[in-house]
Image (tube, rainbow over all chains, first blue to last red; front, side, top):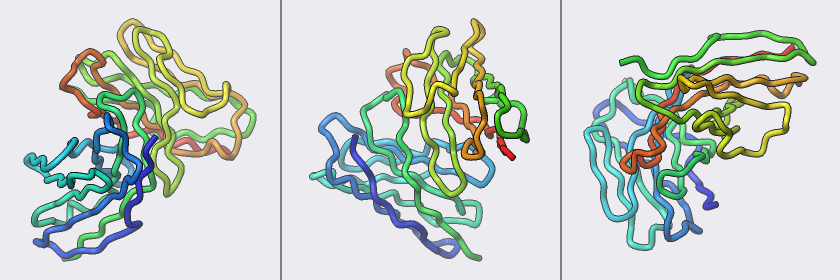
Length: 110
Length: 116
């Protein structure tokens, strides 16, 4: 299973764009990249999933270069409520089990 | 539309005891997965239930067992509790047969188990 590496923590200010990069050097051909968000004392929440190039939804964008060895989650104009832990996951589409790492703790300041 | 619900919210047990945690999946979902999340760590997959059977299992001992009922709700049982079992236990639901679901699972708020 492909392992992922993310920064342990990041700080930002309200209104800024935040980019969190995840490394997954040994990603397999059939692996997808998925991001989850987790607030304190809550379960994780799905943000976005992609295979290649760029995926965008109402919450975030996911950028995946051609070699797929890394990916970047982009959060436009963050607010205080975006303070959370963000997990990058790599695995087959519609997998039975999600493999979480330790995530990136994002702190947004006013 | 109710999301995933779990009970109880918090639980305190002593070593050697047994515990049962409960989960009701999101309406319309047929698959329930259980995860253990230690403090400061990401969730770790325990097992998944579909059609009342264990479909896949993570690297957890046999002390961890589960059950799924005909209404798709599920229980997680842990026997002979150890101090290291203290964690947040998360339940997630999904619809196995939906090809559009991808890797989107809906998580409940979790049950915080403390073993003394």
